Image (cartoon, rainbow, N blue to C red; front, side, top):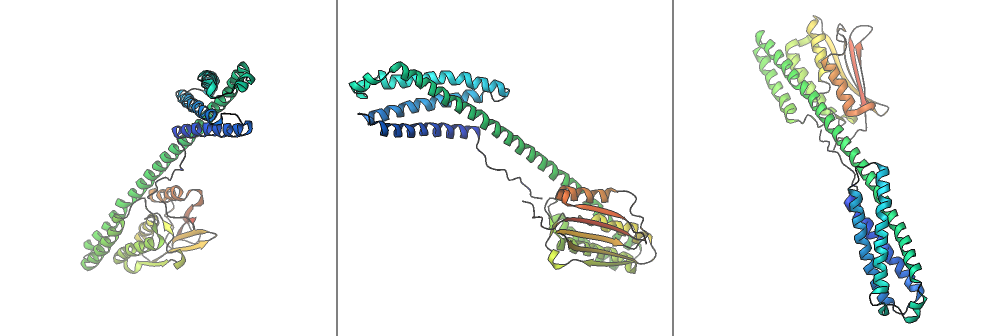
Length: 363
């Protein structure tokens, strides 16, 4: 089954840090532009340029803050929150000092007129800037912690999902490979019996049929679904091999509605059920055994029934083959599949499996 997990695309923490930094300081510049357009300062262009420098310094400080927080990602949440509060304070103070120097220390006459400088209460402006910066850096730090936690949780969930998927694929493959040698052994045993009975022509026909079956099974991927049409054709050929041995003692009816022919199904899923009929009914009975393999649709489910009118002695618990069928159904279709088997009241034996009709082929 080619079932590579399609993981949802999510930001990495580094990508988020870059986007959050760029977004925060782009928004800062946009707000500055609105504010300047309202104030109508005398040297608006110079003020805007200096705010751009402040924004660049703020972006560097934000990147440093995110980097420091990333070093603490394995610490408990309370430690990260405390670190965010502590680290936001020096970043806010550093940006306030940088902003003050840019605006009021380096060539202030290029920015402010004499009247504007006289109207600025610099201590109040400095304290207000620290408070605004503290809020900004704290908010950015908390946002980084929250998003980083979400990304870590998503990554862990995806890793667990991938691991579970790989384990399921390995189990499915192992279950399928249990069947291959078993199936081959039974077919070769039939051919051997024909040879021992002097039925050379029938043995040759059986070998040709077995060759056709092996070409199909060996060319298939153990993890890729086949279709009901291919599965029924495979068992028609296999039962043809057994028919050469048992002759009139084996009477077979295969029924597959055309509308169900392309429904996906794990390869060789029915093989243990068919072999049980050969081993426990045809192989031990001197009278003709009629077996049927029928598929039908019911309530959005595909129901496949394998039934015979033999002595009904197959159902002594769940043997390897029957457990294989049950486990492969559960792994492939989950809770949407069921498997029941047992002897019939009036003689014979029936195995019934069902699985969802609208199940897409695995990716």
